[in-house]
Image 1 (cartoon, rainbow, N blue to C red):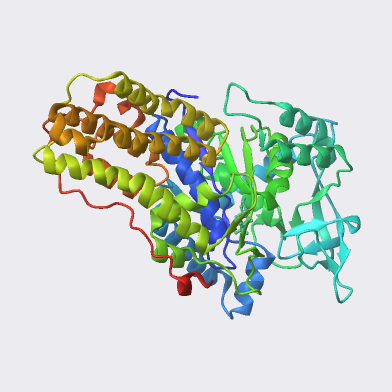
Image 2: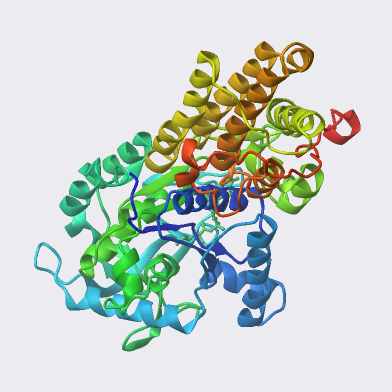
Length: 532
Ligand code: MSP
């Protein structure tokens, strides 16, 4: 979809019991690329990330660190804020669930759910006693049938986390009454407005069959600890951390002030990006809570896959957690950003390996793209008096090649804005990068230098124009490197959005060009570094 419609995209808010790792960096990176893409495409964007600071897991982590919970979350939340800087995310807000604006929003959402009746005319929330299994690591309740036995006979949740028996007074949400409405919600293919409400399709099928099965009422308050948001009119209870956490998405949009410009512009959110592990919370509980409160559910939830490290599950106990700061230092930020979205079809699981980062950085960034720009710009620098040259008449080959570069945005837009197929978008872009290399190899401007200098100038200009298109389209993925490439091409800084694609804003002949410098370094495949 093009045009000026506003676009609201969110990452999950991160638990502050831990330091950021590659999985966290990945979810937000995908959002950042999408947010940047939408802005370049002329849309007003609101990109939200932040931290999830309440609940038993965080309370326990604070206690284990011997810290007061608020002091603890203040410190750990900063690590996630630092991640946004490290990864060059363009988020417009960073929400913390301990903020007053959020506490207000949660309590108001609760009140509205209480005030409304379910589709079956019953109360949405009722008080009872919860007796069942709870996993603190997942902050999730599990039914007996979902559990398996661990090595020492302990009960294990499907996520691999241990569970404990919990018995305490609790408020319940009448989830079952929302089944039909949820099924209608999943059935919406959103063809005219950003795609199906749950994606990819395999995930939509997964939640659909979950909702068609037996739906238990959901325990939505806790009484056995206190690190959370008090339930309105009953201070003995704090809200279930997922109800609290999910609400962040409307808090940041200005709720409960529904008359605010912000709320009217951005709610319902266009896209909640999540990992596959938290699909159910976002596609079952969250839309049901919203509908019960009389609010609109998000337009779309996309669940991506998980990363392993050199073939192994990433976990603290295995000691193989990948710190984004380490790989950014080792390979460079844009190389990491490119790799994470190129390596794995978005939605699938994938494996991180140093060898794979090196291969892609060397062959696709340094060789294919970097060398292309470097060769063309160096020839212009040397042979055209360090100025963008004035091309002569285009040949058929020039026209066809430029047409391919100009058409690229249409297919890339479809992959990114509508399907979140970042890997496909990069595949399409790289097909044009290769075409550009083929064009230069075929036209042999270094031969033309002697035989037909006027034709050489045209070839170099056409190649530079194609590189301009590629650099503009790659900006969401690699903002700094593409900015440098566009600087080197002498592309005007106010002509770098997608409206500048095409011939009208073509590179200006006569523009002085700086000395070209390589944008993507080649890494030596040092065995010690890769551990192979
Ligand atoms: N606090 C909740 C989200 C609340 S949203 C209202 C939470 N936080 S988390 O910090 O545990 O996870 C945040 C995101 O990181 C999730 O989308 C999760 O899927 C993602 N990842 C965590 N480990 C991951 C990998 N190994 N690989 C890819 N993403 C993973 O869940």
